[in-house]
Length: 271
Ligand code: HEM
Image (tube, rainbow, N blue to C red; front, side):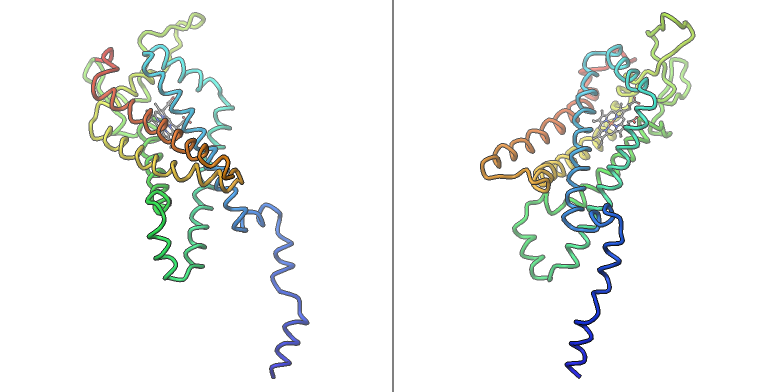
C-alpha cells in the first residue's frame, strides 16, 4: 500500500508546475511574496513622492491668491498629462492597497497563533497598524476629493456676496484677467482652500488624518527601502533619518496649512 502511494507520487509531475509557468511573468511576480513586496514598495514610494510634491505645491498658499491660483491653473493646463498622472496615481493606490492586503492575509494564514502574539509584543505601533492607517488614508483621500476636487455638497459650499449658496468648484478668481480673451475666467482655488479650512471640524479631521498618514509613512518608507534592497548596516542610520525627515516634513507642512487658515494667519483677504 505504502509503496504504491510513493511510486504514484514520484512518477507523476507536480500538477501545479505547468499551470504556474503558463502564467504571464507579471502574474507570477504579483503572486510571489517577494514580487508583491517589491511592487508594494515601489507604488508606496511613488505615492510618497506625490504627497511630498503635493505638500510643496500647496505651501504656495502662503504666497497669496495670485501665486496659488496660477499654480493650480498651471496644473490644470497640463491637460492630457494631468489625466495620465491621475491614472498613474489611481493605479498606484489600487495596486498598493490590493497587494498589501493580500500579503497581510497570507502572513496571518501562515502564522501559528503563538508566534503572532509574540511578534505583536515586539513590533512597533506604526508597523502593527499599517493596514488600519492605510485604510484611514484611503478614507481621507475619498473625503479630500469630495471636498476639493468633486465639490460635494454640503461640505464644499459657501455663500457669495449676495448671500447665495455657491459650490467651491464654481468660485471665480475676481482679480484675474486673460490679456488675450476678456471673457476667460479661472478657478479661485485660493478661496476654496481658505473657505475649506475655516471649519474647525474639517481642520480637526485633516489634522488627525495627517497624523495617521505620518504613522503610515514612518514605517512604510523605511520598510519600502528595505524591500527594494536599499539596506546596509553602513547606511541604516541615514535611511532611518530619511524616513523620519520625510514624515516630519509631510505631516508638519500638511498640518501647518489648515491650522494657519483657522488661526487667521492666512486668508484674511477672503471676506
Ligand atoms: C492639508 C493637506 C492638504 C491640502 C491643503 C490639500 C489641498 C488640495 C487641494 C486644494 C486640491 C484641489 C486642487 C485643485 O482643484 O486644483 C487637492 C487635490 C488633491 N489632493 Fe490634496 N491636499 C492635502 C493633502 C493631501 C494628501 C495627504 C493627499 C494624499 C494622500 C492628497 C491627495 C490629493 C489628490 C489625489 C488630489 C486630486 C488632484 C487632481 O485634481 O488630480 N492631498 N488637494
